[in-house]
Image (cartoon, rainbow, N blue to C red):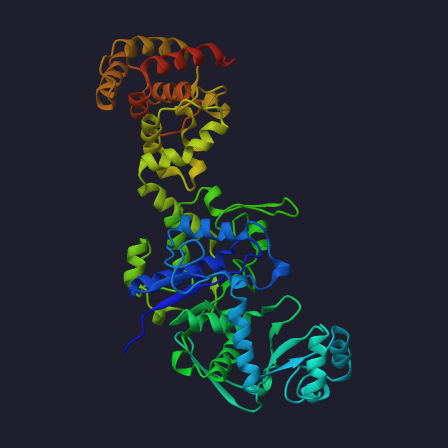
Length: 510
């Protein structure tokens, strides 16, 4: 019988969630939904020294913002909990004892100084079958001494006993069969008495087994640990429940070689975290995609295509599209360049398709920052509808459409020089009279009346209309002029023209 698909995303609460981790969570979620499976969020907090306050909440908020739903986790609960490793100590102790009782692991008392001395004495030292016999552990010490040291409170670790010269096979759904010789593996530490917690390697295997995880989908950086995990499954006798492994390609720097880092984002001006992060210790603030003005759907679409393709020319895909089309067969084995400019393109496309009322809500903080506290949401939405095609990020909606909310305080110098002549104030006064006589300011009606007036007067169409735009907008930019004046109150339009007549000086050479 085919196992139910159960996947897990297992971040450590040691800081903000890197965008590479977000992609891992996304692929897990897409695969689970595609197969009617479960998505587990497990918090791997066994390294108490690296714990950062607020990181766990940050992880949950990030996934929620991106629409990556969790079926089981610390917040959601579930039948396989606890979902925080620091709350599973009893489970790990029991499994450590099983390995020790079965001779698959041993206790080591080597101090950091003794380990350092061994590294200096033995070239390319690693704790393994060739060196463990010369170290202080339960394989070389009398059982009575081991018991005495433990009773006296001596600190120790439990190491996995790896048998040398074995071919270990890892079957990966992206990379195929990977074979390594066990002799290159060291006897990894599985448990530390100092904090009564397991290391990643033991906790990861025990939790995946007990939570009935069917597929382990994680970054390529974890591929070297996969052979060890295969051996641990065998040591526990859990071969029949071993999950299928999927190691995703790395996210690479946009420029140069190597893995994507925060430094790359700082240097080139793009976020590497989903949400803004405030470092508790230093107060340093790192930018996030949400606060920069990206839409979550755009970030999801962008990330999904970093290391995977749908097998056709599709680019713009909703979460439902991704769930329908996703396949590990179309994942790349090689790393994916992080083309942040393509991410901006995706956001531009999604902004253009987004609901104007939603964008109005997203723009509200920017309006408040600029002193606009009483904007009508319906008015804002209509204004956004006219300018969003020119915007890449949410803040660009303000840059492109600020004139809808406040009259210009200055006028673009180059446009004044080109579009404002000695005759302009007189013509603008006439235009005010024309506008005052229009009862129906809908775009088509106002445009016909104004253009007929320009034609009847024999005025130059471009000069009049550009001066009109300059007076209302402050520069020769923006959407169709009569769409602007349909939305903007007529009295405001007229007030702006009058103000421009007063403020813009007539060129001296006129």
